[in-house]
Amino acid sequence: MRGDAEARMKRWGRVEVPRVLVRLGAVGALVTGACTGGGAEEAAAGTPMETSSEVAPTTISQPPVPADVPLAPDSERVDLAMPTFSDPTNITNPLFPVSRQASVLMLGHVEGKPFRTEVTLLPETRIIEWAGRRVEVAVSQYVAFLGGSIEEVAYDLYAQADDGSVWYFGEDVFDFRDGAIVVTEGTWLAGRDGPAAMIMPADPQVGDVYRTENAPGFVFEEVTVTSVSETLDGPLGPIEGGMLASELHMDGETEDKIFAPGYGEFYTSCGGDVEALAMAVPTDAASGPVPAELTTLSDGALAIFDAAGSANWKTASATVSDMSAAWKRYRAEDVPMLIEPLMDKELEALAAAIDARGAAHARNAAIEMARSSFDLQLRYLPVTEVDLARLDLWAAQLLVDEGAGKIDGVAADAFALDYVRDRIRAVLDASTLARVNTELGAMQIAVVDEEPAAAARAARQLRKILAEIGR
Image (cartoon, rainbow, N blue to C red; front, top):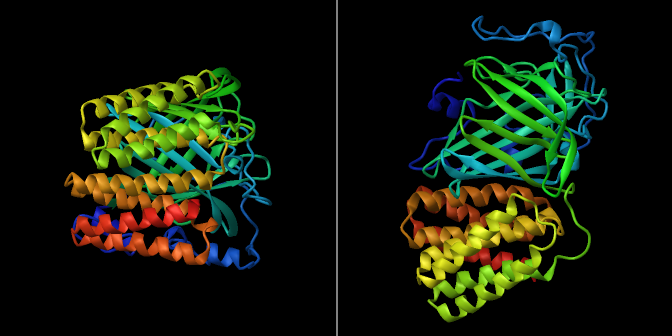
């Protein structure tokens, strides 16, 4: 294991504060903080990549693994040869197409609670030194929400080798508990903690074995391919050529995983917990403008949020009726199969909260309904437009949590806002980004000072800024 939390925080140069560890700076500082010999800034400046004058090894040196871990024989491994990288950030492997996925949504349940993950390819890259070479890697942001609250954030580093295999160069991981952040032992970096690890072979075959994480003491996973010819139930229909795999962990436990062409990781299950792919774009993108029914759903949910806040139940009731009619029309079309029942449930919960005249419940239900409506709009809109809407929803959630006296909820919402901001920072002009950052900074300070009312004031101001962007 990586050691205790205090040691990990010192390693990352962070200071522990009451309730929450403030994340100063944006993703550029966060992701490049552990990079050696330069980083994303250097790559962006056009500095050519360097290679060692020494002869590169032809095989990857393997770190020792405890003898009691039931490993597969080395003869079955396909990840021992040293890869070469000529165009590493062009990741097009059908079973792990990072460069072809702007946004991925996964849904499921963990410990009996709803589980949701949003995976976004970020516009920046990093330079990682490993085995005498410098490799440019893509950065993918993974954000998980459990029971409606932020649970985990990871910045995953990937590169595709010249033979088409995809390699994992590390991850920066942040876990959350009760609105506070903890840097976990899952954080690792190739060249510092162990070798880069193959996360998908170029052409996987039954019986192939590879280690997706290969730094025992930090992280370790060994995968065995069990099938490459599965037909899977995709978001919008059958998918041929699915891959099944069994993933071995250091404790000897195994986890089942499924990968789908055009999507990548498709389904994971372990101990009753499930995470399944609900939708990915552009794989599931649709042509044409956003259907009017989806606009009715998202606009209606936001209108109900406001109406419930002012106890205008007549307007709220009329609006939810219009939304129900719009959803009935839209669901007759192709709707991703995991999102359809979720929308049914959320619309029913929204109507029930309105009937009960429960302001807080109705506002929470309206946020969830709007979030799923915007998920469906991912098929028609640029990802950054949907993320701007998600940013507004987290600001709205902070207002609800502040009104309910949920201090930990306010802290968690502030973190969610910070990470969603990282996805859209590249599309905002400098002036607007500065305004957004000012309000996010004010929220973080308010959380540290345990002044939720101040955080709410910043959230209201942020919503005004976002409304201006949308006009």
